[in-house]
Length: 357
Image (cartoon, rainbow, N blue to C red):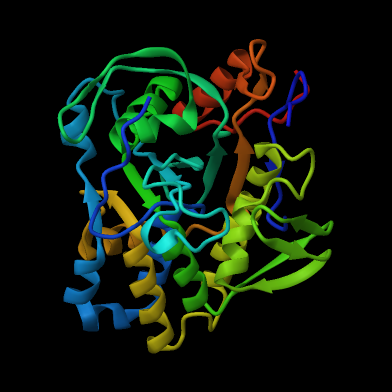
């Protein structure tokens, strides 16, 4: 469905061409939650994770982003702030083939992308969602198997993963934002379902009914506890809300993220060692991270640094975009407002308020 001629920065409240992707040890990809934060909170709350250290450690898969990108990257912020790129993709091969939408032949696109900015002190965060249909400039990249991918001035953001892999997505985001991504987190469809199931479901409130035959989600308005299948459909749905564009889906994803974080921090949610271990097991199976997070020690250190973060201090916004003049089914960054947003994050200042431009 065509986008409107101009779109403003979105914000939700706390209530509210390519080579196929190479198969890895586990089918992974999607997302939607700040996966690193969710896993960190689960591990921090559940000491039972230590009892099966070797098992949980063996679940983790990693990507060496630093090695892939070298030194030609933005400098780390002097304030000590952290920036994390969280990706989920729409791959439905392997274990994901039975999900709504069917198998897509082993390829994957970054269906969800969030830049999570955590200022020094780790007591707050800003989550910036990048619409998957955003047209961007892709820098020259090298794939994991050594293939050279030329720079391109105009590609759809969610195609970069398919064409050149996760390191190239990181490089593109760093070029767009001027922010160095300290960490990379990727979550897959099937693993996401298992994580929600291990949590006993996630409670969300919908302001309007959702009826989407493509994602398989059918919900009346009101409060619901979603199981894994429903939760996955919830964060993927777009045809059943708003104008059917990706922008409505981003609002649901951000709402779900805050609900997950609130539930993980709620007293008693992970008080059972068995349940805590189940969440940690599902989370580690679902995740691919950069190498510095790709161990239990790395994740537990990260959890310790994030223990003061409260969901109500997470601000969720969307990259300011306008309709693409060439193809109105696509969007491009509203450069003036987008650069104000990235500059605010680089300087650890409050992000600009939503504006009609």
